[in-house]
Image (cartoon, rainbow, N blue to C red; front, top):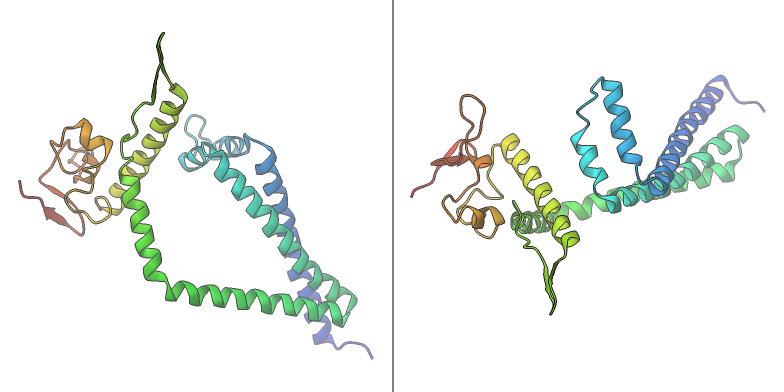
Length: 249
């Protein structure tokens, strides 16, 4: 007995729906392999985007920052690769099951969807139950990153009988990380009108910036409200946080 018109339309929609996911999975796999094998994949992507936007000199800052972290790029590549393979597998079951009208494949496809749904529900419940722990851990991570603000790490020096050798590689890497931390924090504090994690005294006391300024100010310029010309003040009696917070001398 043939399928009714409505059943055929449903079969066709199911096939097209899963075919679209197969194509998306293939794209993810290709991108994942590209990011894993090509060291300059993100650089090339940033350059291509800048050409598309018509910006020749200024590339995307986010992509440029990501390109400076090859380990993170490789991890994203593996995530895209394995995620794409999983999507292709599940979507292929739906495509073949709809095209062949084979019940075992459709049952397997439905089981995979139910498993994915169950995992998502379990993850949502776990996240809701432990959200306070995530907030606490995230704040600890942010407070730890403040110690690197403007360069906490000092150059590593190796002493020998004949000469003193400075390990420029370690120093350069630490200073680069510190500058990335400072840039990220400055941008975050200016955009969100906040200062550090809790906008309280002493948060920057262990940072390299605090030592460089010899404690002349408790908060960096990025915490200060901007001047009328848009430039940041070197110091200020108030800081950002839901309006103005007066810091007493």
